[in-house]
Amino acid sequence: MGDEAAKIRSSFGGRGARGAGRWVALAVLAWCVAGCGAVYPELSAPLRPPPAGRDLSPPPPDDLLFLGFKQARIPTTTRDGRKWDKLGGSAPDPYAILFLNDKELFRTPVQSNTVSPTWPNQKKANYRIPSGGRLRVEVWDSNPVNNHPICVKKLMSLKEDAYQGEVSFDCASGAQVTLRVEPAHAKIGLGFYYELRTEDIFVSRVIAESPAGRAGIAKGDEVLEIQDKAVKSFEDGEAQSLVNANASMGVKLKLRKPTGDVKTVTVKNGPIYPVDSDGVAID
Image (cartoon, rainbow, N blue to C red; front, side, top):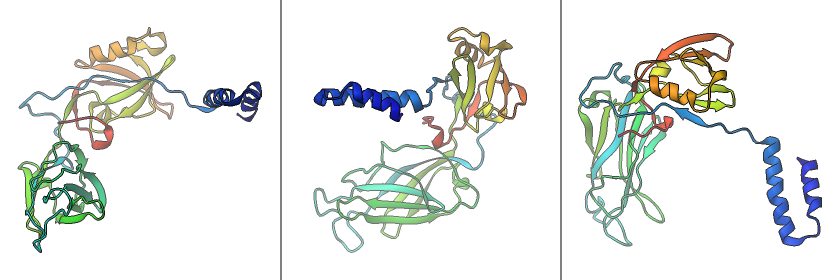
């Protein structure tokens, strides 16, 4: 990089700010050519919502729950009778946080000037809650200087509440908080992502609770064949076409593991239960 940069710099020497700007741009380009990793297009089969009212097989794991804050009801004043806010409206600006084993699992955005927040813009997702995990809910009033606590509550296991749809609890401040708790929500699909690398295809990501994950497909697997056709013979777009067209009936994949072992699997659309970190939006 040093030699390349020197050559570029010398070619613009003595040309003022315009020359310096060109040198910076070309230096960045030279660095990227020399050291940036290649970026490959990542593809996957489409995901769709599950059929309404139909039992899914397999069902979601017991330790995977769909969670979000449904609502809170907050007293109009603090426990000692003061207004929540000295500036602006008198109502609090609440936000809520759920902790698992003392680590933040997720939080809502602030909902301003209300004693009845529902946090409509919050992100709701599936989260893995292991047996014996310690859960804690906190609700705070957001303030410019110091945030004020509205509720701090330790919770028991949520597994029993999942089939009720929600759990409500009272706080020492007089507030009541309702947490949305349901069995993990699903999508229907294959559950793996793959990269096109010139003449090769590699699996780049796999959702653990998916047909691909259950079949043993893993990140780093090289796809040698799709539907008994060698990947190296594919035309542009053929891999995606074969995967998408056969997803409902079964996609046959011949894979080479990083160990060198070769494995053939067939996967078809089925329940996917993505966790928050999988980056799949669910309702």
